[in-house]
Image (cartoon, rainbow, N blue to C red; front, side, top):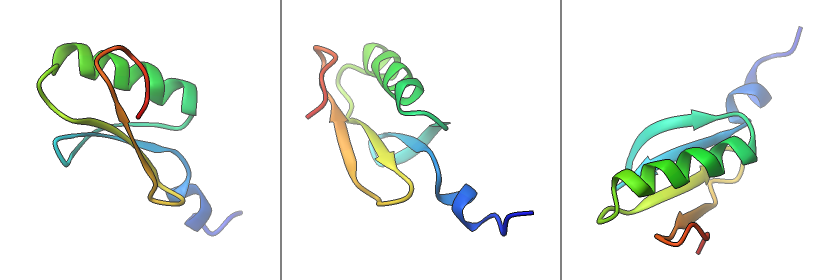
Length: 66
């Protein structure tokens, strides 16, 4: 059995205006969720944060990542 440390760091957090709103274990899933969050929250900042590295990418209104 694994220690769980790697599993806790795997995946992507979906962040709206600095608050965690959702989680995805795959990058494709994170992109879909971020796009839907941006459609519903056009005036808010929607980001995808990689748990492992902490790197963030912002979802733009046109569906592209910044």
